[in-house]
Length: 138
Image 1 (cartoon, one colour):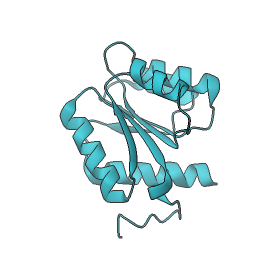
Image 2 (cartoon, one colour; image 1 turned 180 degrees about the horizontal axis):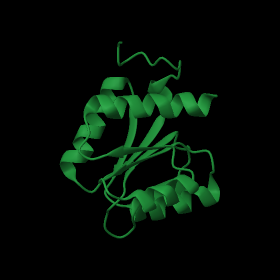
Image 3 (cartoon, one colour; image 1 turned 30 degrees about the vertical axis):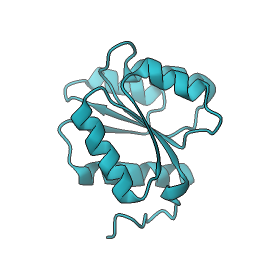
Image 4 (cartoon, one colour; image 1 turned 180 degrees about the vertical axis):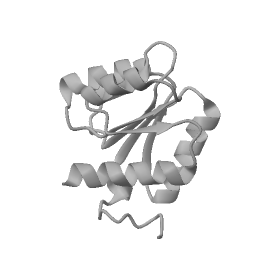
């Protein structure tokens, strides 16, 4: 499968993505994968508070949020809760460490699209992004 041609027929080059990751290496990995997939409009931020400000003040809506769970100032879960108050359909992928089953159930109830558990591979991230857009297209 060519990673640049999504099976779900979504034009990734026209999608706007917000990446919320406080770890510079994690953020770099996510950005590289997104660019390899054909995403061009990628906004990066290091915590949920900054991300929420970008979402609230965006002149063009985001098509996808990829957020780490544990971050300073505002967690990914808190960001998800805020996002759901204004947009119940925005695709939201949460990256988290293992062993957070109860928290994962809470996030599912808030409408998280998919989880990615650390450590993860670029291919796992690609698969979750593709599945997220397939799910939202249906």
